Amino acid sequence: MRISITDLCNLRCQYCMPEEGIRNKKLHKEILTFEEIISIVEAGAKLGINKIRITGGEPLVRRDILQLIDGVAAIDGVDDIALTTNGIFLKDMAKDLKRAGLKRVNISIDSLKPNRFKEITRGGDLYKVLDGIQEAINLGMTPIKLNTVIIGGFNDDEVVDFAQLTLKDEIDVRFIELMPVGEASQWATERFISNHEVKKSIGELIPIHEKTSGPAEYYRLPEGKGRVGFINPISSHFCGSCNRIRLTSDGRLKPCLHSNHEIDIMQVVRNNPQEIAEVLKNSIMQKPERHFLYSNRHEISKRNMSEIGG
Ligand code: SAM
Image (tube, rainbow, N blue to C red):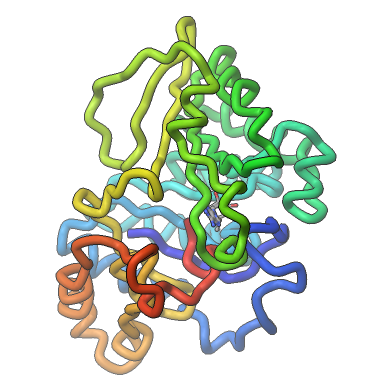
């Protein structure tokens, strides 16, 4: 289960969020409390949902994040908790996060050039993210995964630099295809680069034939310590093996990232908590056979990624 714990973010990545943010801050009562999130995870754990990813918006801007991780880590049946973050606050928070029970982190980073990083994130400080990554490495929060979206004409000349990060440290660098959702939905097609192209530009890669639970295909550079991964939501559908259920901060279950179909679990948690497990089960059964990104536009999710969590 992927849980977006806030819509708020301290960055404004151009393809993810409008400059002014998503909308006015929601009222407190419109956001699931941490106790409510815990009760949904508990019900899910009884159904066999054993992997939890905390995301956002930026999860590290939520004040009760440590309590939340501590609470999720204590649930019987949850054996994997991970976090997706932009890494800006990671250096300062990594020790406490680990102490609270966080096992591992994914860090999003789209450029290794400070000015470019500032441009794409509208103001972010690359050095803070690099310090955060180093801190996670020092603390052994493994496997550390860096997620990079390659954008045509913007950072496509940095593919090799990113891949080469796996030579020095045992980290995974994963290239994720830009999806035409939210802010990026109106972008020109030249900006969307398939991972086939990205992979070709890296040169020799040795396939790794391990079975992983996620959608990434993994390779290694000759002499690489870490892995180079490709996540291809656009060029190859992995809908058939998608086992994710998403929970938004305003209490909606999303059986598919790309579909507008949502189930209001907030009302259930608040009024009929004994029914949480049933609603969760029904929502999972409503996972569509495939996404409709290119075939039936009115079904497409109207939310930005920053509201759903990547
Ligand atoms: N703030 C956290 C972070 O930066 O990782 C978590 C939320 S962010 C929405 C999660 C991931 O979604 C980021 O890696 C971001 O690059 C990715 N993302 C956002 N919009 C996207 C799009 N249109 N296509 C592909 N990935 C996208």
